[in-house]
Amino acid sequence: MTISTIEILGAAIGLVYVILEYRASWWLWIAGIVMSLFYIYIFAKVNCYAWALTYLYYLGANIYGIIVWKRNSDENPNLGIAHLPKKYYQILLIITLLSTLILFFILKRYTDTLIPVSEAFSTALSIVGMWLLAKKYLQHWYVWMVVNAIYAIANLWLGLYFSALLFAVYFVVSIMGLVRWRKLISHHTKGITPLA
Image 1 (cartoon, helix red, strand yellow):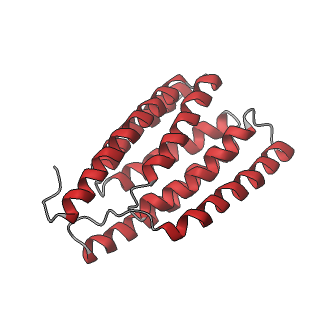
Image 2 (tube, one colour):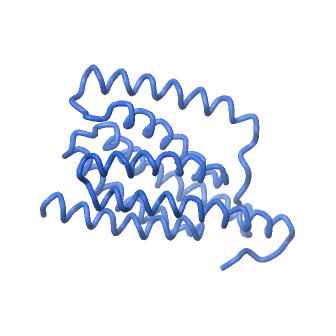
């Protein structure tokens, strides 16, 4: 298979993933595992090493997500979606900034990546975003808005047009997902059955 064929398949699976994420479906983790395998290969082929490693991280994060969501469902079968406690904001900001600086230094000094700033910042944000998603914190959608915007623009610049389109769709779905999850939290708080 050529890189274009693999990219089309990866993007298609990515669309399935984001639909499942939007619906807060447990199956998003399975789609995430398959998508991760495709994008590890795709990003390694275009010298985006941090992004390839991000998707390697996503493999582990998807397995972690399966375990955490299962446990949360057992403890809270109605939903489990919550707001990020304020005590985490500062530490997550520090983790993001430090991770960005470290990744930028490594990418700039030891690799031939074409987009070290975009890769470093979006990778740091992605690590935080996956943790937020695994914990079912609503705020993960804000993180994905920024990440998806970076990925869409950078992939377009790299000539990965199907991936650029995928991440542009992700950006829109991030906004829709934020609105939907807010409704789910609101209905759960009021004791109303979540939206289908």
